[in-house]
Image (cartoon, rainbow, N blue to C red):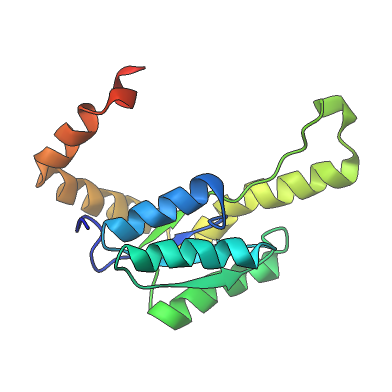
Length: 163
């Protein structure tokens, strides 16, 4: 287990499967306490939480439908109530329709916009201000430059050379 996120609380939306589950597991592997969010897939949330705990990290699952602002706000409040704060947010939750744009109904379009844009709204609830976001980013950068081997290890990975 690494320690790049030791002592940090990270909320990963949409972490019951796919990319979100991988991000949650990786954050746990780096020492973060992970808030595992899911919408309907409680089993998936539990599976991700098991991976978090297998990595030796603390975590908990949280259910919320991010299409509804009150549930998004309640998610943030529940994570803060449980862990005392949120240090990092990964806005992974999102939906789409596997059809041509012209074939999406207005109801489905509204749901896509509500969920996919809700992440930005959720960010605004986690951070007090734009300055707070900049301060968190600067703090993360300062910690990263104090660990040049981390930057170097990323550059050595095969996938990093495809750009």
